Amino acid sequence: MKAMILAAGRGERMRPLTDATPKPLLTAGSQPLIGWHLKSLAEAGVADVVVNHAWLGDQIEARLGSGAEWGVHIAYSAEGDALETAGGIATALPLLGEAPFIVVNGDVLTDFPFARLIDAARKLDGERRLAHLVLVDNPAHHAAGDFSLAADGRVLDAPGLTFAGVGVYHPALFAGLAPHRPARLAPLLRAAMAQGRVSGEHYRGLWRDVGTIERLAEADAIARGWR
Image (cartoon, rainbow, N blue to C red; front, side, top):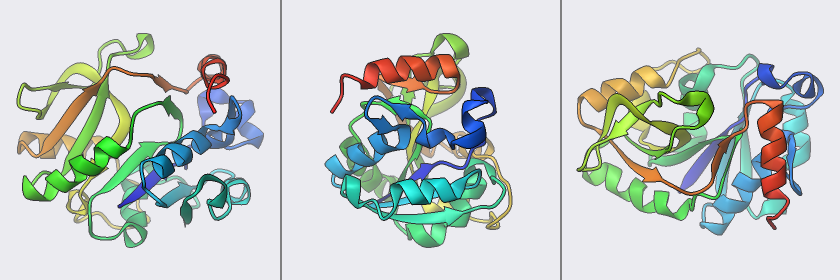
């Protein structure tokens, strides 16, 4: 199974830190933010990882290299200008293959066990679903949430919980999208939800959206206790 880490964002809310350093390379504890994802994916047995980049992407490739430091192999999808989430994934599909794959935002800190998504990926084909999303309790900065979770595990297009930026997608979700063109993920997910083709789970463990300098400081304090 393969995974993709989204690392192309400019990080406007974290300027001036991101003027010289891409957001996924900002440090939390002993690692760049993206390093914790690489470590967790390797521990889950996911060794093939695609990383997209745009802003200061040369720094990302220089720091992460082949991925050997974390026990993974990294392939890079360079975008030039950021293509938004769906556009970035559609552009990277030739690197991701034809099977369901994990996607995680490069600017979150979480101890979510990625091995759980391997089982979720196996079910997507069997149940004709297009995505499986990890949802979390709403943080203070996003109190309304994004989606809700039905009793049968379907994700519904109604506020309730927050999308964690962690999920599994079937390549068919991106059918019809042209590579190298900007495209948003939310409309694709909502269309699939309307067909009952998105499952999900509610994760109650550690999750932080590291979207501001203040939240980076919090993430750094948390990660200082990790190895």
